[in-house]
Amino acid sequence: MIEKQRDLSLYLPVYLIAIVIYIIAGIVEPVFFTWNNNINLFTRITPLVLAALAQTFVILTGGIDLSIGSIISLTNVVSASLFCLNKLEYITMVLFIVPLLGLATGLINGFIITKGEFSPLIVTLATGAIWQGVALIIMPIPGGEVDLSISRTLTGKIFNLIPFPLLIFLFFIFISYFILKKTEFGRSIYALGGNETIAYESGIACKKIKFMAYGVSGVLGAFTGIFLSAWIFSGDPLVGSPYILNSIAVAVIGGTSLSGGKGGVLGIIGGAYIFLLISNILNLWGISTFYQYVVKGLIIIFALIISAGGLIKLRNFLVSFYFDKIIKNWKGGEQKYYKH
Image (cartoon, rainbow, N blue to C red; front, side, top):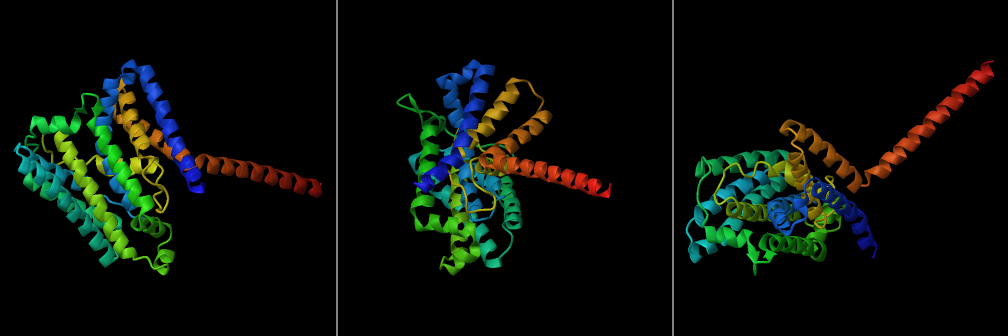
């Protein structure tokens, strides 16, 4: 019961903000409320949700994965190279080999970090450059051609009604939630991120958990690359670049603490909607791209403050500051009184 209340207080502000922004977008452009537009939104947030899920597993351990964008790019170009052949064996190959490729890149990250005890920031920055280079070697410029039937399957509708992208990201969120909340591996991730020393003394194999967390991140990054190849009908060696910071932003807006051990995946959909709708509104208002970076950054910071309970901290700080000022003024007046 306490855990449910804690989750509610953590994720409710995120979805309230997302709803407010959605209503504002609908007021600016009524087409936002149409079902077809919502289907488009489901498609657009799917890779963002998957990338944020990948980042969440790592952030919960107290780490960070700056290679996620390059993993997405690498798996995207590999998927596009294989998807062009519309045969069952090649489709099966993509769904089997590409996630294994993502797993391998993630485990390499985890191996270097755990064995060398290096900073995740530096390691993933370096490996990200490697994966990006490999992606450019495979496909120097955007190319490949994903068969139309495959693209329509992954980005279309079931029974001409239910958007398949919606089912995709709901499925991965459910699986991720189950892993984090219902398995020993998931509970160990929270313990590790909360306090690694205590987790180690409690008998948790901290290095093994970190190693596996980066592997999961790599697999989720691979599925992001697969989906993007179907969505854009081709491969792009730089398609993953925006997801480096975007995945971190969505994960944190969704309630996951960068210090590790707090948060989860239930707020990621709300975080993805906030991030995406901000861009849509700014475009509808015709705001220059240069100003969009500023506005988007300010709104994200505001969302972070609310979702992290920062308003309470800010209020306490202002109250404390106000009373400190009163006390100082009172003491200053008292000293003047005694001097006279």
